[in-house]
Amino acid sequence: MSAVPKPEERLTRAEVGATLAAFQPADWQRAKVIAAGFCGGLTGWKPDDLLQETMLKLLDGTRIWPRGIHPLVVLKTAMHSVASNVRKHNDASPIDESVVVDPLEVEDDDKTLLAHGKVTVTPEDETSGKQQMAALYAALGGDEDLELFVIAWAGGARGAEACSELGWDEKKYDAVRKRLLRRLAALDPDRRPK
Image (cartoon, rainbow, N blue to C red; front, side, top):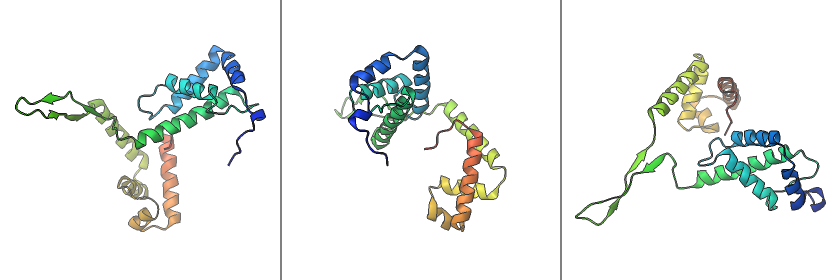
């Protein structure tokens, strides 16, 4: 665990402001690319939103800017932290972004308001899902252990429970899990593990 930098080891608010003001257009472009990478899976956030929120936290002192570290590294680390917090908040939220509520309807004889939900899965989403499943099964290449492993994981079994279900020891389970992760990485090298 890293120690919190002492006040003399971190930039003051004025120094943070001066450092950000000295950014060149290329620096901002790199920062936006980094922000775009962290925005995957953040409901309602765009790269500019994440970059803006991170800069505010650095400027107001909520996030620390250590001395002697490249500004883009500081921004990247802070954006990762902010995105992680937003992701945790979204996961704990009772709002499901994949469901849209239709406008309210009022029945004439009943003063009760009705709201009907509808799932916003498009034909493109379904086609993409089917293509991803086909690519996954093609990547498994007929490997029976991998296929069994994927079925166990799809059923929610992990760790000791999956070992028991599959009749494997931990060593085999771990070896098959690593083999699957390598194949998935080959399918989509830009995929971010959760």
